[in-house]
Amino acid sequence: MIARSTFPALGGEATVAAEERWLDLARRAVEAEVRAIDEVCSRFRPDSELSLLNGAAGRSFSASPLLIQALEAALRAARQTGGAVDPTVGGAMLRIGYDDDFEVLPEQRPAAPLRPLPVQGWRVVQLDSARRTVKVPEGVSLDLGATAKALAADRAAAAAYQAAGAGGTGVLVSLSGDLAAAGPSPSDGWTVLLAEDHRGAPDGAGPRITIRSGGVATSGTGVRRWRVGGEERHHLVDPRTGLPARSRWRTVSVAAASCVDANAASTAAIVMSESAEEWLLARRLPARLVGTSGEVRVIGGWPPDQPA
Image (tube, rainbow, N blue to C red; front, side):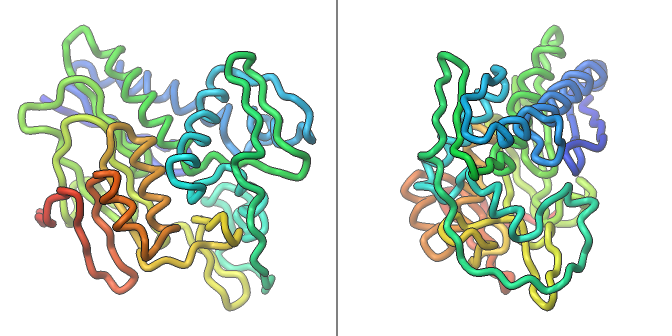
């Protein structure tokens, strides 16, 4: 019988689903992976490896294998999306007011007008994976939020499956809506709820899909929001302006071979706005797009909504 366990993780919630007798082992494996990603990639921990890299002031930095993997994932996402998803948005995140874990951000801040300021761009990151070194120009700050959580989901699912592998059971991991599956799925697949707010109950109302492998990610502008003066802001930055993306879409869900690829595509689609559908179709990525007025588009073989 499939069971699930939920616990706080990375500023949201983690859910692990596995055969009941292996659930405890799977959860412990997921907890270890989430903890490792947080210690290495968090922008909000002054002791994280990413914070130390951002403070290296242009000097060559010796990185751990996990940070190297996270940077490789971020740079790959930047290449695949033509820079729509870019890890050099760290400074822009600070400018727009996303300077702490979202759970402790004030809902209202004093007025602070912003002008467009494009980010320097992912090509300035000098990564030598073989030597495990990275250099970022002074004044450039990295943010791995667009890919690190998805990487954590992929790694956690693989680790949980390995931990529970003696029984040949597969696992599904969700990190605040970033989903990754590993191992054999149940006979009827993994059924998951699509929600614009990842804090909703997994058995709540809404459309559902079934997956057997790979990853699914949902990006949106409706949840992580705050006000600065009379202006409402969200956390998805357009690298071309350094400002919160102005998009036709409020939520985009994408299925791909991995959660990292799905997350990069869903985030890029928000930033790309009007050109998102053409870009997704060219890459044969199934997607569900919800417009700012609530209209729903499904493309690339994504099934029509089937409410519970």
